[in-house]
Amino acid sequence: METKELIIQGKAVLGIEFGSTRIKAILIDADHNPIAQGNHEWENQLVNGMWTYSLDAIWHGLQDCYSQLCADVRQRYGCEIESLAAIGISAMMHGYMPFDKQGSMLAAFRTWRNTNTGEAARQLSELFHFNIPLRWSISHLYQCILDREEHVASIDFLTTLAGYIHWQLTGEKVLGIGDASGMIPVDSTTGTYNATMVADFDKLIASRNLPWQLGDILPRTLSAGEEAGVLTAEGARLLDPSGKLRAGIPLCPPEGDAGTGMVATNAVKQRTGNVSAGTSSFSMIVLEKELSRPYEAIDMVTTPDGSPVAMVHCNNCTSDLNAWVGLFRQYQELLGVPVDTNELYGRLFNVALQGDADCGGLLSYNYISGEPVAGLTDGRPLFVRSAGDRFNLANFMRSHLYAAIGVLKMGNDILTKEEHVQVERITGHGGYFKTAGVGQRFLAAALDSPISVMETAGEGGAWGIALLADYLANNEKHLTLPDYLESEVFAGQTGTQIEATPEEVAGFNAYLENYKRGLAMEHTAVTCK
Image (cartoon, rainbow, N blue to C red; front, side, top):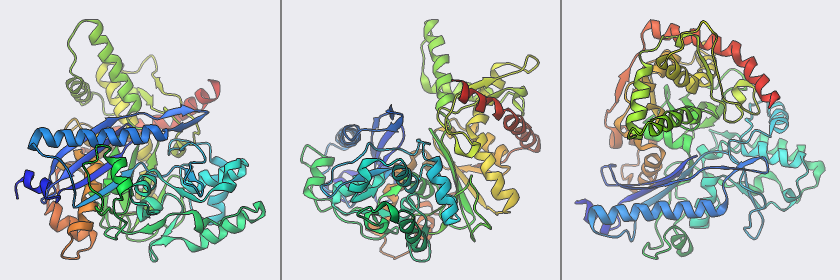
């Protein structure tokens, strides 16, 4: 079927993902190829000490992103989107969005970036005998209880950003199991929240005499492929104020960006994994069995179809690196040299390949915000060198590219060296890999594992949630999600693979030992300013 006719007949599939710096919409055809897209740039704001996005920013961003998508469709195909086969909504995981019975938001959206929940996370980890990260919804909720925030007594519904958008579009208070596993631990055997932990939490807060129990305020969990509601008339107007989009379109379960990254890289089978590296970074390794014990640096979540996953999440990745590239851009502009941002990134990334394997002794700490894996509740970006270090542009850029994945390596060393987890394939995606062969090679050195990058991985989570929506709408063969991706979407594609040399692995390890010794400087910087 020609693309224009596919769109006119309402058989295209739409995926929308709310990332940290960009909202992206992708329309795919029957062969899962992207046929149009829209984008909206946005940034979180630090308000009253909390990283947040306003509701106005959320809805303006969604509507502008969808409007850009429609404009792209008109320009390419000369037609309008009036209906779709399915829609999927994805967003950055975790965080805190509480609502009262009238649907009014009770507190500003608290994103994954906030690290004010240390005491709550510590107590809950001890109570559950399970690592509860600072950014998880249950940590935010319990911290609000500990801090005696007034709004807690009025909570009727607690959800994530993806769950909120889906609720407003469909009226359904549901969440994909992968995103739900970042609210409170889930039980992969039952496909819902861990009943023992829910009961333990209710006992923990019983003396507070709150008018709700935890199970009453959480969204219902759904696995990939399950029906999650349809676009209501009100939801259609929220998404498309022009009124062209019709109601009645099915939506797949809303998911977090970690789950959509796994789908986009065909990494939902056991012994596969993926690394997403952009504003933040995380690795997702699908396990054959549970870990022997909890680790503070490793979160246990699930795939969109409920399999257990070991996740290493790092709050900081490319933001500080981007700031340095911006400085070089300003220098070029000062000289009156025309600047092409993509070319600038490409040249600076490639020159890093000429640097020493250990960065010549240079160190960079990219902590724009706190970094729990490194034991930091706040961050200060630092660049450090000794007088005798080999200070040149190649080593400078290499140190920043290493720093972007340094904490990620620290977490993954636990899996490989202490738990002896076996991984057959790791796939990278995100902005860190945009310059071919650079970030990919450095990650291969960091993890001492071959790293693949697929051509489609650049489409990111918006494409991943579109695939999950397609899985809901077009899985006529009733395949499992791993089989559907393997046979219907990727059909044996493995991407381009790079394996680091022993010298590169040794160089990164040497850099990391310096990096870990130097963390004391970062801790001091946080306390001094």
